[in-house]
Length: 252
Image 1: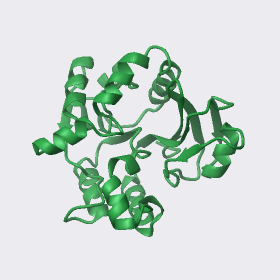
Image 2 (image 1 turned 135 degrees about the vertical axis):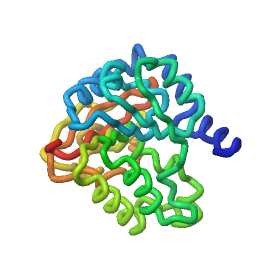
Image 3 (image 1 turned 180 degrees about the horizontal axis):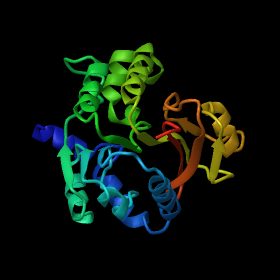
Image 4 (image 1 turned 120 degrees about the horizontal axis):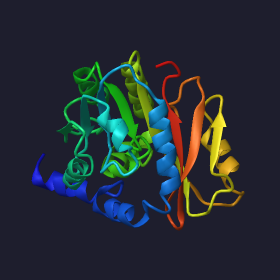
């Protein structure tokens, strides 16, 4: 990774230094209920493999140490150099392997699907955990959104084709994703929700917020299959609330 790329990763709006500072401030208070939810979800998830690929773990602020240490190898796809340093320091018992390549950019010489496919092909025998990553694509690739797709990258056919290709590539392996679906500066009227299948964003907004609230759609619908979905509120800051969707194959 070039120095300018490392600098950008350390200061990107979806993570980086600002996010680590928020974690140090709020992880034992505002973040605690959501962190407990993530721990319970991951402990209940029992993939039949001893290798794990974690996409976008940051410094693992929500990840349980004992669960990570149960794998013989954990490959972290994490471009932020400070996050990688913190992962080593915070989880010394975990057998880490780090990869700073960007497998999810819609730009570059490879096709979008081929770029992500490189990652999944390289680690075919590993379970895959998307750690609050898939709801951050607009924030991570704003130039691509504005320049190539007129501010509608995640509504474009190219995105849906890429999404379908990733789901196909994940077929046959255990995988799980926790990702932003919606966020708002208004406190929601419920803390969680479960459904028998994926819930449209408009319906989800009505479930969690009163009419008139300003709600941001992270355009991360479409990852859930026909099975149950879980939705949990994460209060990231005193006036910022995220609805996190948990999805993955029913039988793993």
